[in-house]
Length: 163
Image (cartoon, rainbow, N blue to C red; front, top):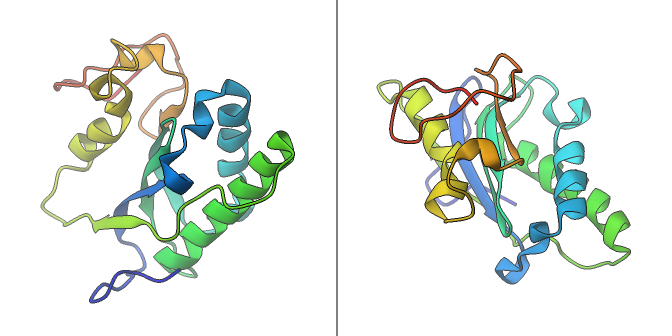
């Protein structure tokens, strides 16, 4: 899977990435599959020198804010994420076939963009989709800016980035 025409991957750059399930099938409406996907996606072998800054898993897609490490390209990293998570979910489903659609959407974050505002946008997806009233009610997201206290509340319209 390659970057879109005219794009390139830059080491040290942060990217907003989105990829969808095949045919936008809401695979992750099943909590067991969602938990399996989350566990697999957090594996250190996927990230190597790259960093996952924040993410949200929706029923039919994944959004993440990733920082590309020196030994990766964005395409290599997304291939590892999709491959590893696909294998893990297939084991749980006892099925074969493609979990993820081909390709992905990426946006290279410019130096003048507000990284926390982008992270807030990512993790507020479940609220905008009407799945929950507050981000804290949705279990499938995380951000490196959090201190680990899962009882905090995220303000999707502004404020601090915390649970």
